[in-house]
Length: 541
Image (cartoon, rainbow, N blue to C red; front, side):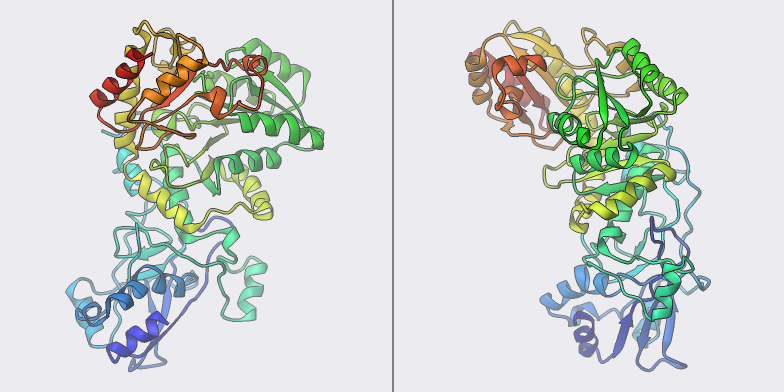
């Protein structure tokens, strides 16, 4: 409706319809075209545009504010959401002013596509020093992640999946949000071709979305992965991954320190399918070798660093041992981020993130992702299509937006957390500090080897009981008392209360969760402000 009303305002009647041609799995760039029937065009009135429909210079100015909004963010994006075709070559076209002039005279001209480059594994070791558009069209994505001229992870986080081409082709800087639940086929024959693998297309919103694909490509570029799957949350990613890769009656290995909900899933849900688990200390290599020898292990799954004690697993060594026994290695790198740690480059098969945390980075979106080889991620993707848990495209946009500042946020958070860990360790009212950047940390030597920075979370024990610790937390003025971490705002919590309050004190102690334990996620506030706040709260207890 937005398009038809727009057309009547400029006396340029036209009818838009899609030409779906997209992959059933991960969309790939095959040279899509968007067809738009324009009144007054010679021939059959159908123009195949390889890039952007350009409107006359006064087109937008003639619209009301409401009409502009309708034609920008959602209107065009939804109408052409399934506009794909890889059956015809991309045509070259005039650029710049000629395109505008041609559009003004009721002709449609497209700009040339800049081809993406071949995929490059992201082994870059340097820590890097959205909403819609009225000009939208779609083009299938190929497996292109990181252009060779982007050397820094910071630049990759900004431009990967967008700068040299994306499934949504537009002259907008930001990626449009494609709000659609389904994609249509022009004729039944095209649907049959799709079902019999002769034609590629999006089909249903649970199976894929162009906005989501851009976010997936961006994460793949940072991780050096062939494929990434975004899901509705980090726990959704973890559970679907385990269900997809561990057969009934299978065996997994995990570590003692981990997110509690992950432990609950492993201890209570997986056994219903006959899946058993060996739980080892993150540093227990002998225990790992014994479990690999005594069981047919399907999966080794751990966080590194772990939650909440920030223990670190030797990813390279663990991957080597597991690979020799045919076990898949999945590293939850949420606390590390793709900028601080490259789990795939270290030998892991899969890296998983709660994108809710650092990747989104603004405490405003839930998402999870798994990255790895196309073969492994396809297994997870197939089960994901059955179980659901699809990411909303608006959430995908927030992930894309958040990643633009990922390197800036991580630099600040790495720096603040390191300095605050040192301040806390020297403070007489702090009993113990857990941070991999400290020499006192049991896996500091491992962290130095496999991480570029040590993250923005510091856990520590106040010298006192639960009442003293509550007084400290309540005395803080800057951080919010909340779950989660990794956002711009600092967050603090007592795990004994926030995550384990349903257990008795003795039961909590079995997991090392003491009443005086504090987990502090440092945001991007000024270091001196945070330092002063923490010190005044400590002085008050």
